[in-house]
Image (cartoon, rainbow, N blue to C red):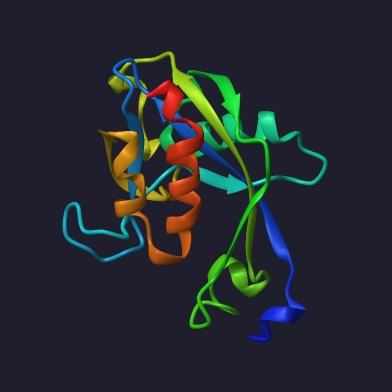
Length: 163
């Protein structure tokens, strides 16, 4: 695997800002990060890769079903631009299968139509997350790993009208 960032492409990805009935958003704790409950950097919004020829709107619902066990949601807004982040140098060649320098992401705001019981992190045989909770939209940047913080700041502003 190459560690030359410039030689690697960006992975196409979608992300979900899932709003609950009280205006808070769902964050989930990555199962592969060793951290204490609530430690900064372990919590993130659901996101995942876009399959070849897949529509981003379909991809975000598929990713919700895969990552949190339900797609009981409707898209209510879309950030107008693709957002991009680069992996830190130590992760290039390792994270994302070692094939990408980072991700270019299309973000959607969704309204959750289910109940908390519909959220099933154990629905996938290899769960990405081990815990979840509802948080205020404004705290997203404080929960993000440093290389995703700017994107979470943009999302908190872009979707503030929905909170």
